[in-house]
Image (tube, rainbow, N blue to C red; front, side):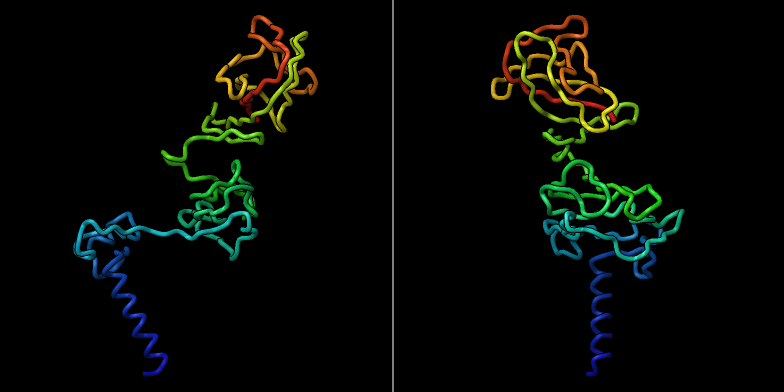
Length: 238
């Protein structure tokens, strides 16, 4: 058998196998597929798998987004259908820290499913975002800027944790404003390891000032914190 005939036989075998396992829209062998909104239906069934207990799943490409430095090809797309500039592309990311090598990254990379959200006019102008799920909805607030699950009037709320030192003789303490911060959304002051929360508010907070920019207390009364080091979680808008 020539190589061409061998390849042709393999292709026929693959087509026959795919029709048994996967139903594809416009397949002449599946009358239901052309009317379905799903262009590929790979659902498990007892006819194909011999038992309803045999599962079938889709395995996504495994990608280390920190080493993903460029998009290949020219995705011109169709404005009414096909996504342009890789908007909506999904990968299974294996990196557990850092940021993607191309485009922006929402927060810090974690292992799991990420998609490319790109409404910009350039291929590299999008943002990699984690695919939310019930098991991955918790946000781990770090000492670097963390994206929370909260929006205010469609504006993203960010968070960051840190420490400040109180002298015991002044209401003023140093809580630096993160880069790009425009407004304070909330603050929690506590001491790690003690299960003690001291306050969830401040008397005042000045973004433009670095030293002594926060006044401890409530919105109505400033107070002097006892001397010591305190932990805080600052939530803010940009």
